[in-house]
Length: 360
Image (cartoon, rainbow, N blue to C red):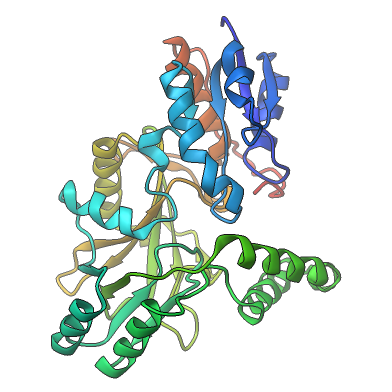
């Protein structure tokens, strides 16, 4: 090792475990701030950069892709690299990417012209699913049952637009459900004023989504979706039940860890797409079409780490099963170190008994 591992530290992000791993294994690292004006200078003594940048921070949305591309030009090994994150939190980018490589993707229509969009709406079949290019956890996802509903959404998309930040009520309901599951309702109530202030600030900084429409075919008959997360040659998978009285599984929090429930075709597709894209880390949301073939709804480079860790093992690229619990942050870091130094000296072993699930 000739230089430091640079880590952009944000509390409760992947960086918590990256730093812990480096300290435990005596790997030289330094904390950097990728939002600093002199970040390129900070990286001159570094071989690697790890930055778990967030779709929810408007500053990181603005800077991350540029800093990562610049670091790569310096010869720094980066996670996430450009191939891994250029499409992150941008469903328009994901549409073009998945179509370009021939991935099994839910049929999707986009338009950047209101009149063209209205012509398509009048001849389309329903229901359809309307989405914004930004947003996670099924925020800004609506089931459109008629052309009249679709026209109203299109007209707003080409006028006032939509905030990509969940509104106060939606966020409060999500926090309440999550707190109920964790038994942490009192702390959530205490933090609510700060949460509302944060949402207000994000709304101001992130602006409105407008100037396009994005509609996907509605795929009926799915009581759950399948989340497959590929990290290197490992695939972790679980399912998420659809919310009661709803059509959405993402953000439901109703996660099921049952290997028998996992369609191996989803694993095969996920490995193949990740290889074609050149992604270090790629999470897929799958549903099953009427012909029982898996279809990709959307993809992401990052995810909630404890949900991946809670999987009872992972599959390798040959679909062999490996038992145990593995933190995805550790897998990401060791893969990057081995790539940077051309060796296989860094590795992690799954935990046979799960640790306390406090990491994100």
